[in-house]
Length: 65
Image 1 (cartoon, one colour):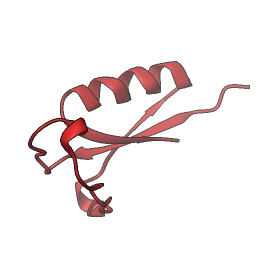
Image 2: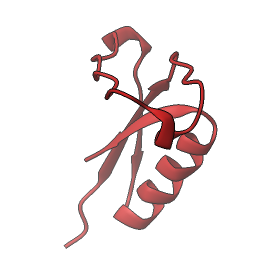
Image 3: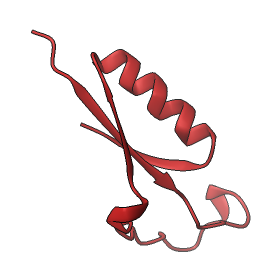
Image 4: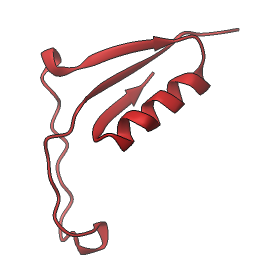
């Protein structure tokens, strides 16, 4: 059974100085403004995950479902 997958992505505005090992506290997650969220649909999970990884590498936050 093929289920169409959706990837939501939006630009990450936060800049973190230092590395993850230097973080003294967790950064709280802030829900993005719905007008800033883009969606793209894929016929299978593999293509959706590849696209999400590429978007993350470009500085976007992603959600796959």
